[in-house]
Length: 119
Length: 108
Image 1 (tube, rainbow over the protein chains, first blue to last red):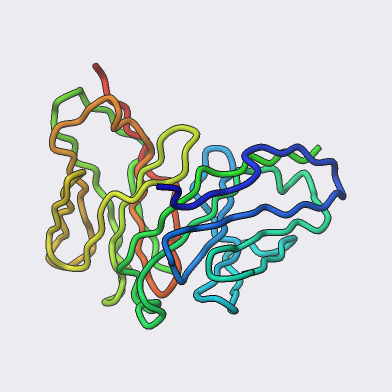
Image 2 (cartoon, chains in turn yellow, cyan):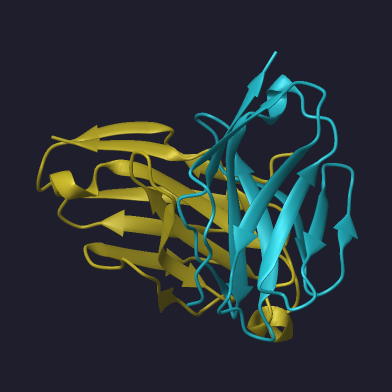
């Protein structure tokens, strides 16, 4: 039962480097999400994709770009990493039909996270 | 987005029931109440959700106030494995908005 798979699990970058975090889900879910979690804090939404071909900004989108490559995969890119982006990044997916999207009555399934340090 | 208020921390003993409260006075009529928990070094894990009626599943029970302005997550017999941060979230539209949650400590 793979569920939501994130790669890599750990990464150290230098300021200014670029990197793409990968996320794939095998549950045939329409919606996918990227969150970040800073120490001692709850998760904050960066971007989400309600369905294949669509993406929308969340609470903290600055400094990030996303690509919904297909229904399974949703990647997060840091074009020029900054120390403030040091965090744990979680990808999630959610089932239900696209018409259900207005009422979040389906749970989200999370990956195990990518721990990213930017020096 | 509607906000939730939870105690920062709670402590209980193993094999005793635990009641985790959540206030959400600004909830809208279409918001679902979701609970997730996060164990150390893991991603959040779905626990339970509901709209108006109380809900039960194999992990927990969710009691929702009649006016929907508060809810309580009930763990019937806590185990050491239930030690985690518990998040009460109002799910509207596409998004979950996480607060800081309640850190639950279980004493052996």
